[in-house]
Image 1 (cartoon, rainbow, N blue to C red):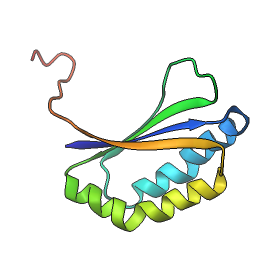
Image 2: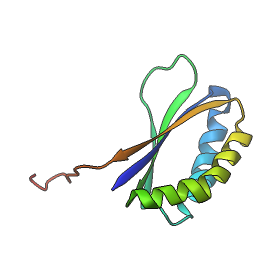
Image 3: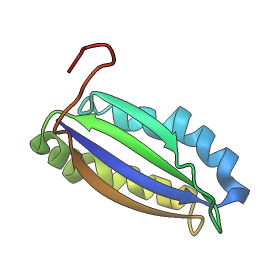
Image 4: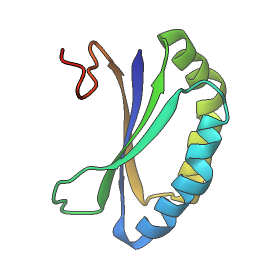
Length: 108
């Protein structure tokens, strides 16, 4: 299992519009591809000199599925984000491999 993590620092003057758009448009569009299992939108809790930082996480079963997303869907979705919030954000992407998960109360 993997997490496709997108870290975005968005400028404060467009933050509210960006957050609403992410929740109502962009993340639902990504999930509508049917390739991801779930999503988390997390604010990174650090003091920033500029903007507000978020980690947007999408869980995916395997790297092949993630590569399909990156090849077929990501260019269009990233272009839409870039056009809407041009020069108002910085983003980078990472892939995390989940090596171990433990649910609370399961003992080990």
